[in-house]
Length: 382
Ligand SMILES: Cc1ncc(COP(=O)(O)O)c(C=O)c1O
Figure 1 (tube, protein in one colour):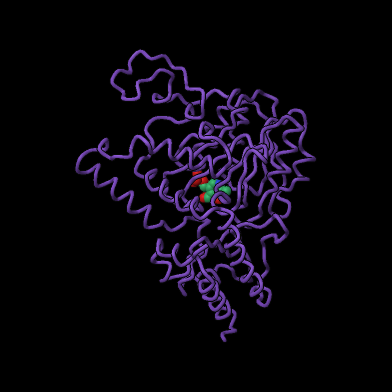
Figure 2 (figure 1 turned 90 degrees about the vertical axis):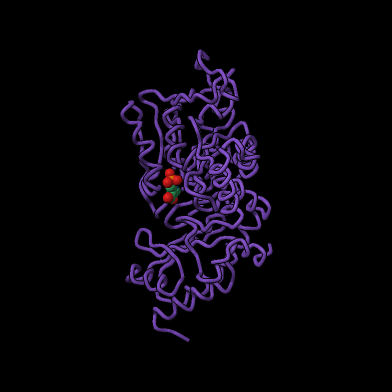
């Protein structure tokens, strides 16, 4: 992976060390330029004059399908993570007495989505926070014949724990439950294979590791799950027999198309999606495998440095448990985070810890800058 070439897409990466991709990434030049070009054409000549407009949505569904090892027919475009997760939760055929399992240490959006089903008589079991994440064992001991959905994050937003989707997927398959994944903290930086992991539902926004604008996201619904799921929202664009040019749309009965486009509701955020396509191009051209290797390599250097400082690493470091997020705490994590930002090292504070989340454009000099700033804070400048 040629970081120098990639860095040309992120010119301001020279001005500061940006380690906050788990909040929102910085956007590549190609993404900004494409959005600017689209906005300018729309401004001057009208939306329909954007030459690639017809191809935009199919391109995106194919790109996302390659990231996930799924098929484009299983992808519905959306606006973030919460909307597609809610769409899936409200569409899924659940009856009173059915159970959903979700962990207490999940990002709140992924808990509320399922808790909201309690009104329908669904039993929502919130697994205890444990060490800050839900393990395979937690799920194994809670699963029963009434469990219809197991909801997990691919990667924890605060400590970076990477769920063992393959094992959880096997458990779900054996129990006849569907694995539903909030993938926003992993997709783009950790390899993802929905087929190998028996994932039934997966959602992600584009604004973090997919290097994309806010207003982008998608739902993956496997073709097996799709067979039993009727969309909870009725869209006007994706009914069978609809005129794609909208010349004559009155009188078409509501009968949603068979593929995942049935979950797309109304006009999408085209301006943001134009940027999404460019950012996905960049990620796919480098390859997630390469990005993962690069990011973990950078974090290895940081972990070594942290061992000599008065901090507690909060992220699990076991094989298969790591991701693009590394968090560590000290006596005053707020002061530490603020002092790093003052040194132009951009990190976040989450759940009492400093969270570092590098991406493909970061280099060793960025990590060295972070280490110098850490040593300065702890009075070990040298
Ligand atoms: C695990 C997880 N899920 C979801 C979100 C955000 O959801 P949305 O894209 O709907 O804003 C975040 C972070 O903001 C997150 O860390």
